[in-house]
Image 1 (cartoon, rainbow, N blue to C red):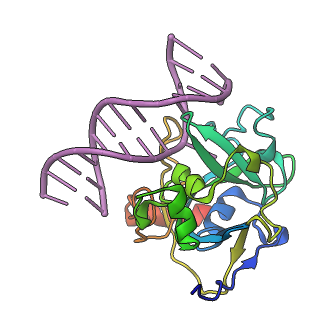
Image 2 (image 1 turned 60 degrees about the horizontal axis):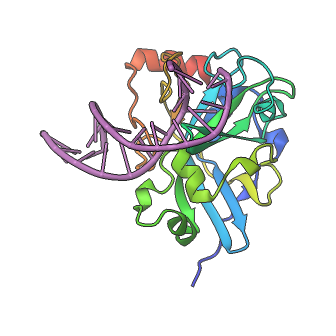
Length: 216
DNA sequence: TGGCTGATTACCT
DNA sequence: GGTAATCAGCCAA
């Protein structure tokens, strides 16, 4: 028998921080939900990356293009793009409308709808179901058709929160980049087994404090 | 659990 | 033709 659904409340657009880096931090410990006819898939967001304005690795760096329009929307819209020819990345727009910026959702801790995720990823252990940006979209069944969707609707694919206290957040450099490799723009839940990259701060304490002050 | 390597395919970031 | 916001598999400790 299914248990009671988690009391996840949809996040309103007004509740989202405008600033890209603040938003990336804010989303750690929040929830990603996909309501399907077969049931609900949900998970706790444990890893994000920020791609702020002016970042040369951002898909919006060269300005508006046919494929990146969603990054220029108001906060809370999905920007979906294929990388390496085979993995879809789920991002969320940040900053005011007209500014191209966003955050990448890199990993979730699967909570509800495990059978639905396992059906899409047969034989994959729970820990690996959504550990990584490509795996996350595979587990949730997210493809290019989700590009531009509003994630603040509380329906279909949406983001939410559960009343909780503060969460601890770790910071490191981002993963998989060949440039801009020194920016502390990756955020994660320290110690979570569902995080795809390093789970401990690589920065010495004083540098971590600097990063925290600068990017909190 | 962390690190390394090879495979892989759409797009021009 | 080169590049890319990766994954799966393997190995070591």
